[in-house]
Length: 158
Image: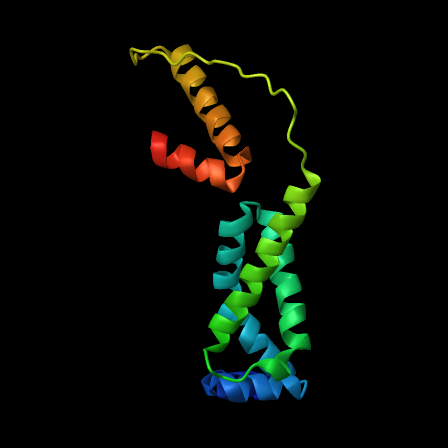
């Protein structure tokens, strides 16, 4: 990066949220870079926490940036730019979850399978490996539960 570009980025980074948004509305590339560099990691963590999928979280953050930059004029500065972007990410992530729920049909007669947990932990490598596999199965099954049931299950069991 050239010195002039780096200096402009540093100056813009020191600007307030409202000024940063105004510069981005004026199509200032350095302002876009500062916004993304400042908020990207936090927004990704928010999206990942909602959808529990790395690649979908990346898509959500990317779509949120597109929506945010398309509607920067609606940023009034009442909250911080980070808060405003976070709300857009949360709305996008929740929208994806709603779409996913509509497309996933619950089976009419689900078959339950009982897996026996070993009662005595030992140094047996086969038993240790079986316990790890059972734990992974339980985690996957818990993750696949609808949010309401998952919260009840986790609250009750854990």
